[in-house]
Amino acid sequence: MRIVLDTNVVLSALLWRGTPHHLLATIGQRSSIQLYSSTALLEELADVLTRPSATKRLALIGRSAREVLADFVEAIELVEPASVPRVVAGDVDDDQVIAAAIAARADLIVSGDRKHLLPLGSHQGIDIVDAAEAVRRIAAGS
Image (cartoon, rainbow, N blue to C red; front, side, top):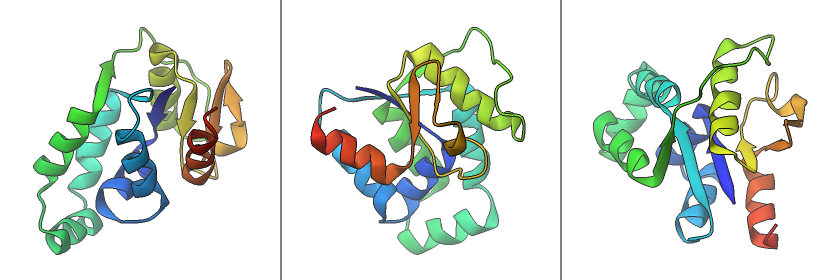
C-alpha cells in the first residue's frame, strides 16, 4: 500500500499520541506499506513546526523541529510531482497533497481536512480518508 499523509496528519502524528500517531506507528510496523511525500509538503511541515503552537508542544515533548522533521524524512520516500493540478478550489496547499499522491501512484491520501480534501472522497482512483479509516483499512489488509 502506498500512502501520502496530509501535513495536518503528519503534525498530529509527530506531536501528539492520538489516531494519527497510531497510524504512523502501524505503518512503521508493516513493510508492505510505504509513505510518500514531496519537497513542497516537507517545506509546509517545516513551516508549521516553527509556529507557536507547535514549538510549545515540541518543548513539552523535549524534541526540536529539526529532530521531528528528520525522523519523518527517514520514514518517507520522496517524490517530485511533474505538475501540480488545480483540484481543490478552497486551498492551493491541498493541491500539493494531490500532486504528491499522483506522483507516488498512491492508494490512499490520509487527511484531517474536513473542509477541502476529505469531502472529495477520491481523486484519480486515490481514496482520501481520515486517519481512523486508514488504520481500519490497514488492519483489514486492504
